[in-house]
Length: 329
Image (cartoon, rainbow, N blue to C red):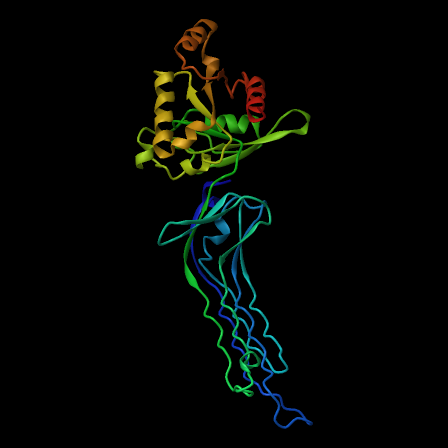
């Protein structure tokens, strides 16, 4: 997923179709000069429907298509013929997409499975034909009901990545390096902060053809929950993760302090994130000897931890084993 091609937030204008008008037709044929009402109902207007697609990973296809209109319903005809319904307009989105009202910010629904469909805006109902309005005292009504107007509005589509494991850490903690080492993902890697500007997903293959999905989000800095750095724009991507993997480099001044800062930022953004399973991973451990490793272990917080080096391929197999056990516990 390249930086230019990842879009996780779009604002779209949607309009449903208006219903077709009912018909006020009176029956006329070669043997009936003055027949009764036989006007059909109008067809309903088209809906605007959101549909999940597991083949999509981004909202890029909606970046330049900000207006979505459904077709109008057709009018009813003679002989009680109902007008055709307007064609529905479909918006395909990746799994994990949340739809919300642009004005109220109210969450309308979320799409979490393939081919799941939710109606964003209902089309207008078709009007009733004059056949519905006949009575013993009014046998030839020469009027029919017009169709209901459609609805319209601005909506926000927001993607929250669906992954099993979310990588959390400060910039340059080695998150992207780990993802590239244990999966086929190719995130940008460089020796400067905020190399990763958009989330990256990688499928990690495990034993016996099993696998799990890992998400690498841009680095968090102190004050991210208040909007500093890249702010909380990407924190929503770890809300759906089954477990969180906190990554702190071995050359950090205080590993425990960095871990507590990360926890604090997540708690201020969404306290429910702390209910997820947590794993502390000390990266770049190839620069440590056994004595230094033991010293660091004494200072670590009371949480399950691992020492790894993605570059030296150190501890990666054991890390995958631990992740798999935690995901399936």
